[in-house]
Image 1: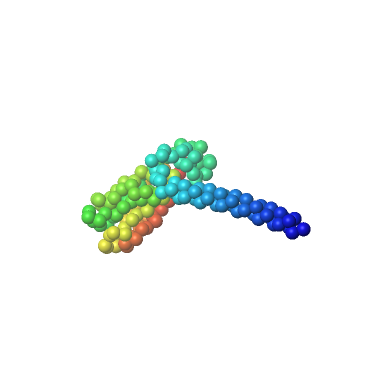
Image 2: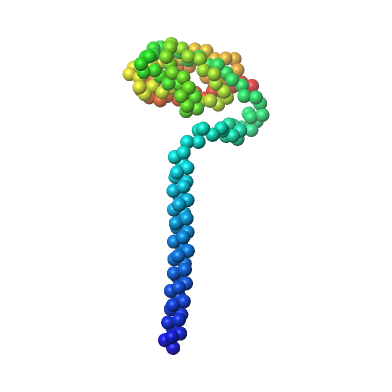
Length: 160
């Protein structure tokens, strides 16, 4: 009788050893997949050309049916510093610096305009000096104060 119990015990142990071996294999594969995904995150994919779907991301389908219209906005600073100029960010990407009194921006529909004044020492007032006819937001005369911070100015809105 004890041989039958020993045989069942051995089969029980071998079954769980197989389960443990398979589980160990799955965990190793998942670990390697995690390391591989972390490695891919460190790669810069900015060199890859964006697909047309990424370019249209976040826009309504009806807006994509029309051609993209561009507008012109002129911003004026009451003072500027050539050593530590303000940075103009369009959609989070630095495009221009305030190295002169006024600057002209070419914007598309729903572009987010921000000013980075973190390195500036003084309070600086920025005014929207002029806008083209096809832009509804911002309006001429809007004024913003930059005081050593990143300021969201506006999201450009076009007239159709």
